[in-house]
Length: 157
Length: 175
Image 1 (cartoon, rainbow over the protein chains, first blue to last red):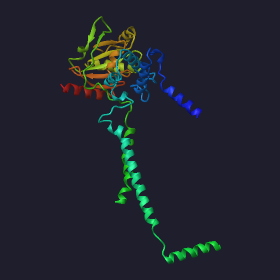
Image 2: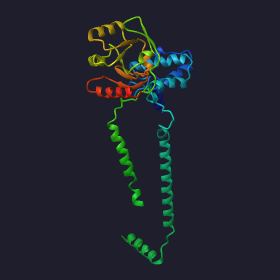
Image 3: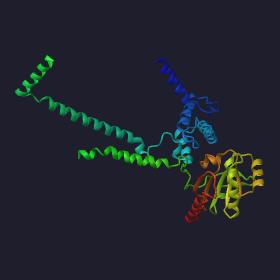
Image 4: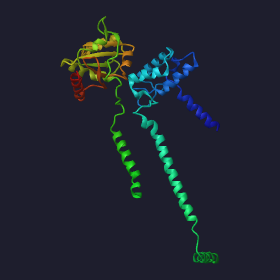
């Protein structure tokens, strides 16, 4: 358990390390947290699968600087995200916006989950009904005699 | 009815397979530019060759190529001779010197030829950020009204010039 916790903490701290982060220190812990969060949620436009925090690309460095300056200037998260999307498109958002383009992305999994749950319930209900029907079938006298004979037979072996 | 239901997973497999197969041939680097259809961003930056300053109106009047380049960019060196050739054929090209040393940029144009009708110095790279530039070379097609029509990422060569020519023609016709 201790190791699990330690690993978890290590992974967490890793996620919040920003390249050249020493250049971007805030007086205010809340601003610092926002900077780290945004740098992690924004994708580097030059790289395929790195966020701004993670990337050594020139453009990522420029955008980190922008991010820092805009937070210092008192812009809120929405304004900063708008600034990025205006220039680099939805590509830069690791947390895609909810719109007609992304409905499938946002609600598809939940919909699939509901379908799966319904299917599961239907199957379980059906099976329960079948076993219930099977249980009420009783043996007639001839069958009971045969069953006893078979059991007796088995015992003699 | 029961029978038909058995084919549902197969159907899902076929649909999924089709999209995955299509995905194999998509270029993940081909990111659509957010600026296509928008006006060229406002700027006020110096000329590389003189004391003059340029503003947004540099980008209006006719269909032009706007080429983002730097002497630090190896691909730009490959692209350069072709731009010189195209400029000689009458294509109007505006250069944006992206985060570069002015002296080195001037030397480069002196030695290799200057295809640019004007070179805007973007030392801080802020205009490039406004343009959504991710690296160099990148080339925009801007129409006579100063609206960005197309963005090309990478080296322009004889092999892909047809795409640029086609888009320039479209930009001409759109007016």
